[in-house]
Image (tube, rainbow over all chains, first blue to last red; front, side, top):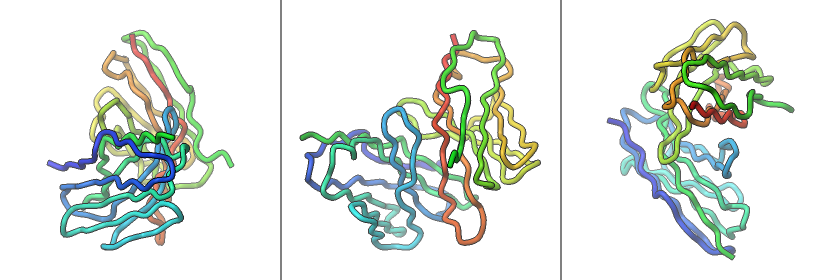
Length: 109
Length: 115
C-alpha cells in the first residue's frame, strides 16, 4: 500500500528552528508537496520538490531525497503565526496525490 | 480575486436527506477535486475532474456524486446522507498546463454534520 508518515505533533519556541520530517512509500514518484493549514482554514501551498536537494523560500526550506523516500520542511526564525498543521503529499505514478495526516506545530513564546 | 468559493460554509443535515455542496472557481483551471478531511487522517479524495465534461472516482467515492458541466463549477452531491459523512469538505483546483507544478488551490471548506 501507499503510505506517508509524519509526526503527529511538534512543539518549538518562537525564534528557533524546527524540522518536520516526512517519509513516504508510494507506487512511483512525480513530486512532493508541502502545504500549511491553519486551524479552521484551507491548506495553502508552501513548496514543491521533484529533484533531490534543498529548495529555499524565505524562512522555509524543503529537502528531498528520492532514494531514501524522505523529505523535510525546515522553518527558521519561528513566529507565532507559524503555528499550524503542515501537510506532506506525494504525487504517485498515476499523478494522484497521496496525503499524510499532517503535523501540528505548536509555537511557544 | 475570489479563487475558489464553496457554499455552504457549514450545514447540519438529518440522516437520509440529500445535500449539494457547491464549488465555483474563477481561475479557469482545468482540474478540480473534492476532498474530505477527518481528524487524524490525511485528506482523502472523493471525486475529481480533469476537464469539463469528465469526472473520475477518488479514494472514497461511495455515497457521493459529482458533475462538471462547465469549467467553473464542480458540485458535490450526497444523495442520502449518513453520519459517517460528517466531515470537512474541501474543493480544490489546479492548473494542469505545462510548466505548472500542479499545486492545488483550496476553497475555505464546508463543515457538514449529519445527525
